[in-house]
Length: 546
Image (cartoon, rainbow, N blue to C red; front, side, top):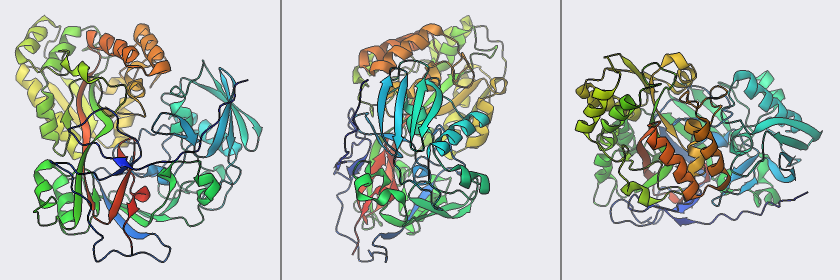
């Protein structure tokens, strides 16, 4: 029996990586460090800074580009842009990943490897939700059962079942040898709540939190208001010392306002009705940088995140399944730079498979010519002439958020110029998830991916068993690709990851388009930023208060 001890996590403040950098970017806390192009030095607290009676910063308003739609738990954390910054304030998971990719406690205090395919997981025995209902193993099992019932268990191929040992101890049985990397979705993405609360509330509009904030107001399409739970179970100092600072609450009220257009969000910043926005367009930054009208109120930073957008063909479609030439024609006929420009904000054109956020990303990959970093209209036409394409309408689906729709519209224009007929359909995130899971509803998807490490971000595209058994998210069934992916998952080593990439490029399975490089504009009341996987978590930031 091998016992693994979870070390106490001490999260330190580090400098923000700007767009000019690459390589190692920590997943958690960062200070707004100076940069010649985009970052301003934090200044002294403004005169209107204050502190609430609770000792917390009283209120922060953050702009959301996409409507959260509903507040149901998302078991696999495939949350889209509307929830990535704050959903862990509502629902917690068994474990988190730290900056080094280790599992650290969240609801679970630790784990023990009983065998290669069985881990014993122990819960903290003092967990309760915001209504005081205790969280036990029975609740964890209920959440997993419910996830399977509603079909929200993508990337659960490693998971077999749970056996209860006692109220706070359970054995996870795996389908194969488990590693810290392979258990990501069951242990770090499955959100936990109590059965009692779920059966007595409509969680879509009235959730009961296991996290450190409760929903005090929710108007779909307009806003979500979260209020700090002073009775939050995780405030115990001994427990807090073992967990990430992600779970610290430094704000009394977090208001999340749905503002789809970046220009409108910028106006909100100018009028001081918004304190934080992560999708301000580059062209609008002069107002908030040195010399601008609002430079005394805000700091600006630009940062590569862990998320990126890909174009994925549906390999069950008659149009694409046996036509590599058509796939290559489309990939070489899309200009990533033009797509990034059309999307606005701070999206950057990708030149390789993934983004420099990840430790195992090798910048040398960008020097190897392929369809990701090469826009070649003439070559695209050559492949199109060799393809079986006869003018069929290709159905492209994407998220209806402004940036994604603009990027997809540019693709339609570019492909039309080649003589490829593409029809775009933009959906809300929940609609997009529904259509994506129906193989007959689309031919191509323009969607995002990400994760705690590079190889994990490939999981939907390369691992069999995503929407259906035996296929990837693009309805591809390739055992060799799956085998290469599994080998790389064991190591997250650049050389192993490269084998996966080379095979995917050779077969034209996926085209990586743009990376998200958030332009973050924040009130100067923010003393230091806190981010998880490259996304700012406003409640865990630190603030200047009197």
